[in-house]
Amino acid sequence: MIRVENLTRYYGGTCAVDEISFEMGSGGILGLLGPNGAGKTTFMRMLTCYLRPSSGNITVKDYNIHEHPIQIKELIGYLPESAPIYPDMLVYDYLKFVADVRNLEKARADSRIKELAGMCGIREVMHKPVGELSKGYKQRVGLAHAMMSDPEILVLDEPTSGLDPNQIVEIRDIIRRIGREKTVILSTHILSEAEATCDRIVIINRGKIVADGATDELKRQAGSGYIIHVSLRHGNPGEITQAFTGVPGISDVALAGSGDGIIDFRLACSGQRDIRPDIYGIIKNNNWPLLEFHRETGTLETIFRELTRGN
Picture 1 (cartoon, rainbow, N blue to C red):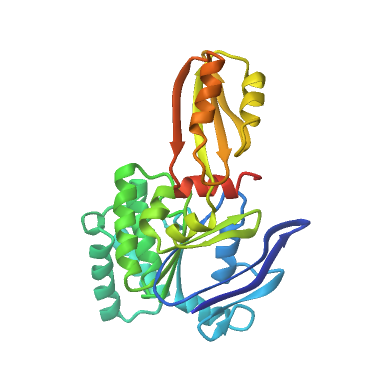
Picture 2 (picture 1 turned 180 degrees about the horizontal axis):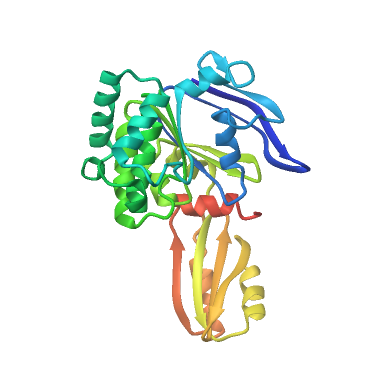
């Protein structure tokens, strides 16, 4: 349904999106992950035809962004990070205005507004001014706006940004229900949310795709490495780093933090061999007071940090 081919976008001399390519079929939820400045929002703006690429192409069904931007916009509902809603309007009046802009007939508009009010959980605020709503409800109204014309594709840029944990769960449930019937592309910084919500994950770093696949698939692609966390009380950080660096199988030793006499280390290990006995032996031989010592299981957060570390 969506084909991205060598898509590139420059801002002056800065390359925000660097020749990315991937395809996505109809249905399902794709999570777009990446650190700030990775190019996620720029990509979404090109997909929704709000921004032209410097080179490359996006095809949606039988339309491409260069020749058929209007047709593509008709297929897509887009919710930017800050929902573009008018604060002085009542929620119902605002959605009626959106329906008019979308040229929905009156009978269809009324039924669609009622349907979206139930789907997005905004029935109880339909006659309140938008400006008086919490951010969670504003996001729901923005989601109803994006879905007014019943688009085949829904593009959501940080849909849960700034929401409290309860609101995040509520928006996540709405998105998952929508994903059963439509194609959804969303960007997020909440990695647990992406892992719980998305069928497929694309990680972008410095404008390039560095990982693409289901969570389990990404864990396999990441290789057989793992992370060990060590917290010690007192000691010389340089001396400890040197001692750990000499252990076969440790590829990187990073000082994760220090304060109040506590020193935290993050040890990147390669291969399958469990080197915790070697590490503990060094700690014991040097009489370093040990506060914490554990192996990090493979999570999306681990993979994300490894793939975007250079950022």
